[in-house]
Image (tube, rainbow, N blue to C red):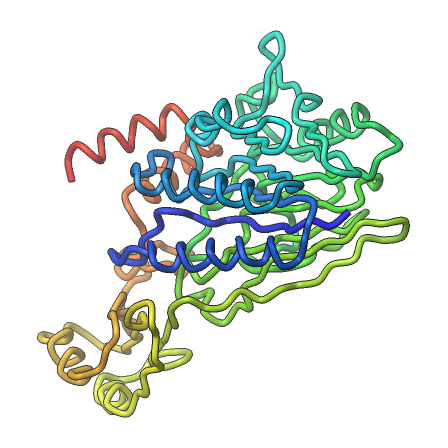
Length: 392
């Protein structure tokens, strides 16, 4: 069988106030064309379909239109989606009753039986295989109220034991594995049982392929079987601008699974001045004047700037905008690299993250992790977003 593995679409994402609708439309159009061209049996999307637990109606419509179009254009295609830590699992599952349940499965939250998690119910039949579509696990999915590596391993072991042993087993997940490379400015840490990452040994060796989401860089993880993060479809922060974003075309036959990485066209360039590090303001102005802007049919390229300052700099933005006059770019961020200031005055202490890179939900989630060692529960996040929406 042949499948395409992708993840972390983050539909509805904004880059410092600029929406990404045109980029998401371009990616989904490209993906639909790829499905037609490569004649695959299944498309599996490993979580973080949406960027927030309460996506706007046009964002949800974009997902529904993609699912309907892909299924209509490919009569033998099966689709499996799981929820990620950014998603509201119940909201993600809303269109399920309107879809062909034999061809499209959406598992936003861990199914339950008698009040307990039922990983056996995540098994989805695919043409020539079976898929354990285990979504992002929250503390409440485990009987003791906490999630650790042993609990996760037990979930996958139970699913594997319930799967037809005569069929190749594919497993899905949305979590942070030890050894995975993190994009610090765009990925929310998933803290489980006080651990920031779990070992790859949570997956049974019987699985022929493990399709993961959460880390935005496409990468393979060493483990008992073939384990891959698909990565995001395009950069969600400047830290991801040098990634080669791709989807994984996986062929499963009698031998080991074979993976072909298909690079996704970059919809809109994301530039940084300077390419690394930071420049004094005068040197930065000269670099901006000489900056060549590539053509972008879907909108002006994004630009992040890093300037080194020794103290307050009145009129900083005006000087930068003057240097950029006549250049078709979208200035998304001015990173001020300050010298001689206390760490806590320029960002989140010890993290390397500037305070301006964090949204109120990020701050809320970070504080919850500091106090309780876990991610906020879904109903608590929903309540926070409701409150936040009422005051902005």
